Length: 362
Ligand SMILES: Cc1ncc(COP(=O)(O)O)c(C=O)c1O
Image 1 (cartoon, rainbow, N blue to C red):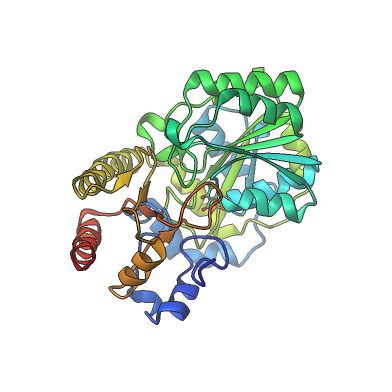
Image 2 (cartoon, protein in one colour):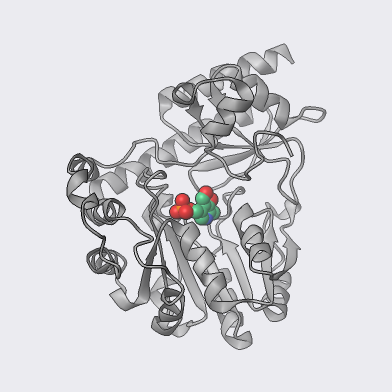
């Protein structure tokens, strides 16, 4: 593992500065997948009044934000739990269900296996098929659901950007019910897709073993504030809530999140920008004849030509103040793979120019 990825996540500017000697403020960060628009104006107003929200204890049962999220997602407040990032919700799911065996499809977000290990769960792995655009064999997912107590599937998956079809999601949910296995659909990046992408959320009542995990930190560009939520069957959500310590979500995050429930124009602008800029970046890599997956989220997985290493590209870009995610440590990927976030046109152009220079030197 490179020294940069030692904590397993993108967006780690403190480590990046220590490893590459670039000050934290100077990075253009393509390693974390955060909305390049920055937070919506409505949220900035909340931040200006921060004192109001930090001088009192936050609501321990998150009433206002759950109500706002319930309206936004057309579910009931009892079907929602709010957490200190989607990461907290994920950890609470492990605490609530204590799976003996956890199923994952690699490559996937590192936290799935880290949490399984933390909570003493055996990990059962299926590998996505590279020749099928990194989709797993459906029958293998079926077996995974059959042979485990909990399966976590990224949708879109990180780092591939892969999205399942509605039919595939329905099959997973059907198998979850047949086998009574909890299936967590990690939809942390789903909001970035046009029209919020395919989701089974509307049919959640048919599938009480399926949980829907969402993150507000990425889409609303508040990773430092931390906010996420999970949705699903009322009884399952109640079990998960029992595991949460009081006030794990701070008052400022709750107020900011509530404000973010009413920003439809910002959401639309984000989706248009991400679609446009992702196509722009993808076009660049295709022209360069580097392999790039047709991911549908706000990031792209790219493969360097034979003989090149993403760790070297990371270093050379770091020398220019640009941080990318080396993906060589993901099971199922190679030392030629790296991930970049989709950012603004100005920043994307800087990345493109730097990569062009490096490719010419090679
Ligand atoms: C796929 C995926 N799910 C969940 C999370 C956690 O999101 P949050 O910042 O809301 O805890 C991340 C963060 O990188 C992620 O990549």
